[in-house]
Image 1 (tube, rainbow, N blue to C red):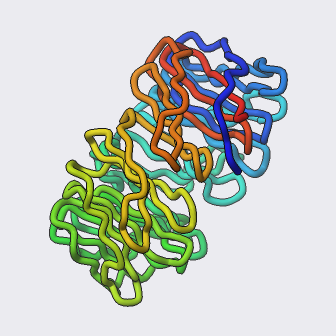
Image 2: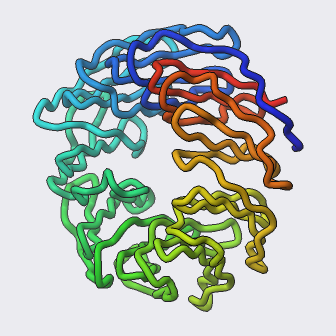
Length: 374
């Protein structure tokens, strides 16, 4: 789809402090949360809030929409609230004032896993408010500096995988029983990813990636990066994309454990890589330079200098980036900035595509803004 520009449709006001995050409830309804201790449900069609969710007494850190029509939200005051998403009413509050909750992940009906700044994982039955199992100190304490969650959930096996420095640890989530651990990396593990074939991918400061079975056995080691590896993900065909502080992006063939392609045209550490289409990736380095490149040949197609605070792919031809209070819309075919957006009055925190034509952005100016793709 060839998208032109962004039309500023609406501004959503109601929060009194920084808007920290947004998630979609459906194609026309979003949920936002804020440092003002509230969450708000908005109708984009009416450009108005339908519910204000009050129950926390500190900054809200995360919210999650559950399949059973519930919402969970967490805050620094140790509260985990459960809400009815349709009625906007508080169903239950779970309090752990000794913890600073950072978020929840869905496990199974009426069960979520929370994580906190104190490095704990807790499996909760949100119907009863009771903790099913607690893993004290299970998370890497510096995880907030990482680019991914500090654990993986293996749904089919009922296992949680965590890492602490160089060790990958497996525990039974229901019973809290420690199962086994393995130390294979030579330096701190920076993240992990569940591959489409259910194997586990890890990457490390030791400059390697490793592919594990769910029994904790290393099946392959991917070598080639010359500095710490920042992040990685899998493409639809099973190939792995990784990027590093060495300024390169590598695409790996997992059947041979060799690099199929190395993109080495960045002059600084690589911050992020986005999937644009079947054939092309977009990567950005710390100096702001973005390259759209062919993942088969490694050739750069277009390049431009964008803001580095964040970005999202809107289509195969459009990329939205943001800096402090300014957003830029880029034509990926030409590398030209086609639009500069300055409506936000505070630092931009994030952006999200809610449906095929609607983008929502949020900011430290306490507002959300709705944009239409034209």
